[in-house]
Length: 423
Image (cartoon, rainbow, N blue to C red; front, side, top):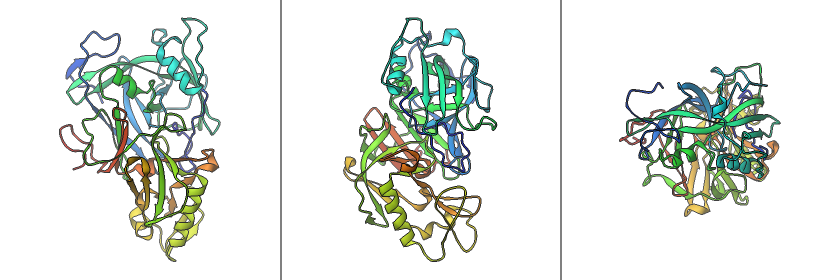
């Protein structure tokens, strides 16, 4: 769903359409086609996350790219495959970004005939055609808010420190975006680009698997207090304690989907037809289709105490005020009940969504519903579990075993390998 360069006080969601730390002196292994070292055993890597749902509207990670490695902030997005940076190729239209624009060289261009280019084009348009063997791999990505990014696929090294104490610098393919029509060009964007962690073969995760560096497993833990951590590989996965459901093939592109779910509020069914659900860390808020959204809003309003009054707030569509301004969700959570999703795919696997995972307290001291009507932004019947609902949960996308898992966790503590992330 990323990038999210509109002001976070608005409805922060961009729907992808169908057009295209300093490295320590540890043992060094060079991965990638041009590397001379031996291929490392599959390991894991963990990265600190920055940002929050409100007021920043996104979680992002710092990645060291190029030779010498330079840092770039990337919006963590499990809802798309392509990792890309705004770059000087030269730049036709770019936003102001935190770091100097990435500058590619001609030797880094990925040719159109490369299999990754075919996969990228197949995922965006379903069509792949090369006019010559030497043609570069161009792409165009369009978003539901009429924003777009045009770029070219390039290869460059990513510096990663792994759990086995090695440092790898595999050459990975990513997008060099030189013509952006996204967000405000006058304000500095919070990120330099997007970290695409979807299940497609052009995803960074799939490429690391191809290099034998990590298993095709990714997880994130987004802290309610801001920050959190991201990991590649399965060393941190609590397989025996997490709730698991098989990945379902989504009708909406390469989304990670646990399949259809039934919706409950306060322990009772809301009587709506099963919802197709996807997980998307590139969406700040959660989105329900029109029918479940209206049923939830009706149930919420019918259950509220008289101490809460509906109020207009520029941050979100549906908000309430109390007798005095709220300072955090903890001040108001007792006034609301939990939402529960039951997934038929995973032997009745449950996801409880307590009030702190669907409410946002704004700078005006109001409590607002962080679940929005997806039909109003073109999502039709798609139901997206975004960052607000995934806070303080470790969410794992295990492409090796074809399953999605989740478990409550202290996301503000970055785990060390060899210790549990849940202690």
